[in-house]
Image 1 (cartoon, rainbow over the protein chains, first blue to last red):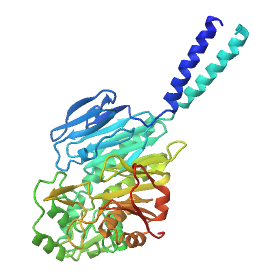
Image 2: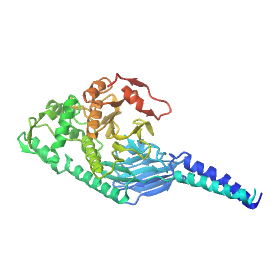
Image 3: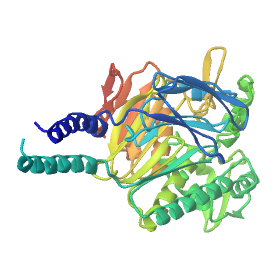
Image 4: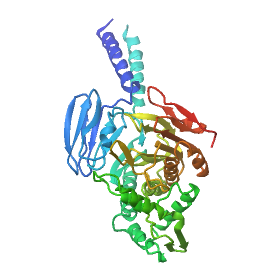
Length: 119
Length: 350
């Protein structure tokens, strides 16, 4: 086998599985979380890095936790705490919102598992 | 491998890679969020020319802002003016922006046997659910609730004479709540269609209407678990369908271990009991919202009669014990997403 043969073989072995996983793998998996506050540029954070983020909404500080490729509200200055009860969001298209504080989080990915959420 | 066999192999590999890469190209999904009606509104449009789609979404956003202002019963605007004049019991000319909403709500209230009745605005206010952030205070005085309920405000108290209306009952105060949101979704979906947009979803605070499809597949809708994380179920919708849910978890407070939420039973003056959520799939959003609200009030024992009377075809109700009640046609469409499916009780066909 020539050097070109080897190059072709290696390219095939590397690229085909990569493209297969990339294009036909779990396309609904979340890749990042978008933190949305009206009138501000959305903040997009990777779900690969565990961290806790504080953002300022219209009432006060909302705290968002990112852990194990999921994101959730863990504190917010609202009374109902609907945002916290929504729990972990992990699939592309899932979202939770603290309406009184005007802060929302949405999981982003290449293909949404759900196009829209009814609640 | 010789040079003569290498060239076709390289071409073959390039072709495979191109085909794979081609699979990842999809038409654009345009998506925008904004706040209106005290909730998050999300407009999603599949395909189309960017300039045209962005202009249409701009207009939808403007229309939502207008409707929010016009149909807010608790801030100066067209509906607040109507409400103050209904209290006089005299005839007056109703604003054209409000009249169709009153007419449709009256029709649906009659169909529901009065279980959906937006005339109970004063009760909503008494409970404090007219505010975006209800103060942390106990439930209202039972006597005040009983007095207001005894006045029996009903949509059927409203009389029409052309553009003039009056209420026979001074206790009538219209708060359309989620119904206005549903009516607004219907109007803006009609607008998108008029602009040549035929594949879209408008979702306002979790209630949505979807038209067309997401490319070569239907739209996939997740129905959030009202008592847990994630989704309880998913459903595919296409063509032109609304998915509306009323629940006890959207606006509520807990006092001495009891949950009090924003859907008031017009017969008792208290928040409905026994039901966690009611989901309706149908064509127009306003009808779905009214049906879901009436089913919340009817509860697990009476929901079937109400759903049938309101002409619903796909309904699901979750009781406080986690039991899911639905009609067979809904059961065929719903796919449960929970690890352990809930206990399901099927009704006769609707």
